[in-house]
Image 1 (spheres, rainbow, N blue to C red):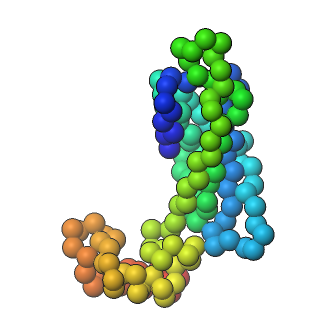
Image 2 (image 1 turned 90 degrees about the horizontal axis):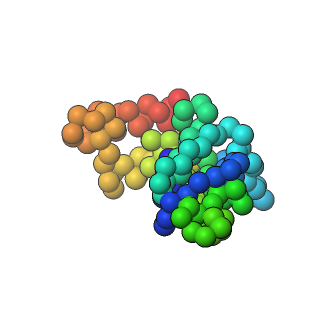
Length: 137
């Protein structure tokens, strides 16, 4: 994933922290630091945050926050980038209700707004069967 900043950036150590928590949330759950599972690269205004495994895990909410090592380039003294919090959620492709599970509410969501799961350019009964099969697994 790429986080675009307002101006050019650089870093001298780990530029951001990456934390996550499972979806659905357990009451009182908090984010867990997983920064060591990621690699980083900067080019111009873009910071690329990439899981070492090659893919983000689904059914997690992720949080990215800059560290003091993320600096602005081309500004006197290379000050650290202004603090921010970037949160995003990744759901299983069949989790249309976005409740963290593939279950019967996803069928209702599909009926209201059909999804073309098999990418044949038609949302039809084949796609609905794919969803139902996932619920049964």
